[in-house]
Image (cartoon, rainbow, N blue to C red; front, side, top):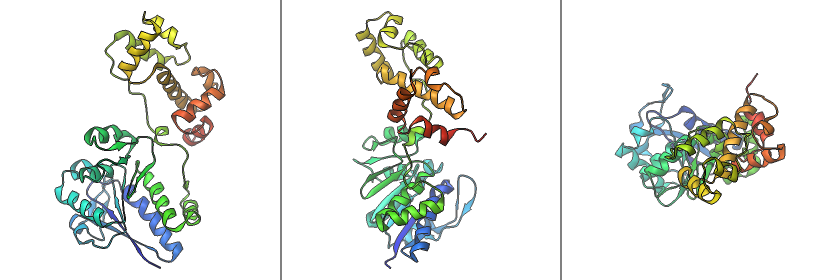
Length: 316
């Protein structure tokens, strides 16, 4: 069987699971296949690296010595902020990407790909908490904040931490078919393709910076009392503006339409109630019916309330 070389680029401050997740998937595939993949950790100079959890990780080889390569995986972690200014490391990532059949990143590893110029004019993602930073830092990159992973061949970027497992399973499926990938997913006790995107894990609650005092107070009330009447006429009357003027003001100041903002705030409130096992959620959050809430969850999170509740409610 032809061996596919997988090289995981590591450096000080990586998240351990960003490297270990893909490694376990590719190694598991090799065990099932009786070969097919060889996975190596490569660091600058072949040195051991210290992960963000302070665990020391040994490298198999130096990045500078890697020649044959099929898949390059660039791990992320808190150390990316220093790593992206390491010209030698960025140069090696750029060199290896030029040799690899496909180049991938996990979590904040996308910043290193972007720094190497590999994401210019391409679509990409990273951990939900850093999507805005990636978009601002590298404006030529089209950032997709809700994706678990984004394909823009021959590059594939994954969201945070465990998304590296999703990424690796997708690549194994590309190489050896869905049956092997499904078998690996069952063995690793993970979903072959998880439902929904990153938005179900992120927190929306940061209030937008608005200059109009009355509008700021309205936004606070929407968060505090999501079940109140927030129709366009009702909100416009509160601000003593016509519905058309209010809608223009709201969209300009908040960056989204009043209806979308209210729905998003209600979904946010419902999420918190579902996580703590509370009842009567649809009514208490202003949805009116369970079906209306279900449709809002699907629009905002990509999963229905029942799936969200089962996935995120407390262990108790």
